[in-house]
Image (cartoon, rainbow, N blue to C red; front, side, top):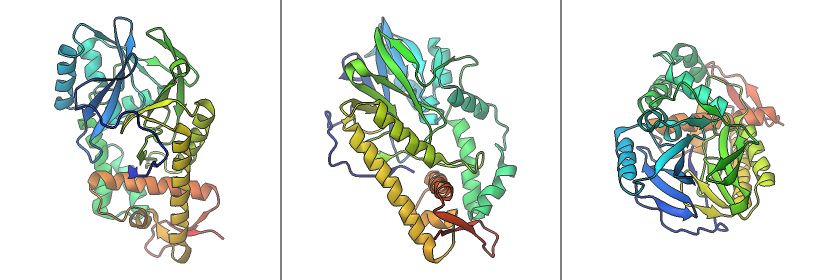
Length: 349
């Protein structure tokens, strides 16, 4: 769930984003292209890295007609005469991979992507119409979601198919530790879990540029969720481990170019804030479960007291369950019986 946080010690070299569809140079040989999203989080930042006679594109935007039209206008206008050389996609979420199939077909682009992210995108592309509904429905009901909320969460898979254009049948795999040469500059590939399976980030040590994808964002915390496909996953543990690795691998003084919000400086400060944020959320859950046992669905309004739309409900439930699984792994919660049959939790000790 994207949740607002404060950033009093971060520095923002640019105070305003560019208009949608208008590329802006954010560093030498790096363009920032902002594309619209039809969600509460209303934009994604696409980055283009100079690559010989053209531009390598980092992520694609959502797979809808509006975004296709923006890409056509940008390539016929501001980027006219410069081709797209390759497409690097950080992870399988639709705002990042949504136009990968269309861009590959339209501009004959090769896709570069981590294997887990590519295969999951491919699996969703060819998923059956029910997308696991019959086997997943009991999972959500067992965790306390009512019938209507369960159906809304299950329908999110169909939404994914409506806002993506597939992925090419072949791709080039990128791995943690790889070095990519883009336009004569060396970029280190870093990957991390939690928000996605194997989300890719790029770090250019020589120019102190860190393309953070969704792993570290200035003003919001990226969604870290558990789904019915992997119900026991400790996604939050994976995310916190990734943050600790990034703190060791990437210096504090880089320019962070994330896929949402403004570019910023203060990576280590922001990492510490995110770790503190999740610790506080775990403490909030423990306190709520101290006097009464609560299901994951019952914890949702404790953590997200505002009214949630259909899109946000699924994210909120998944994020709560990520915290619950992490706390179970750490012995901070214990399962408790519920007369209605839902799986509930009490604070341990």
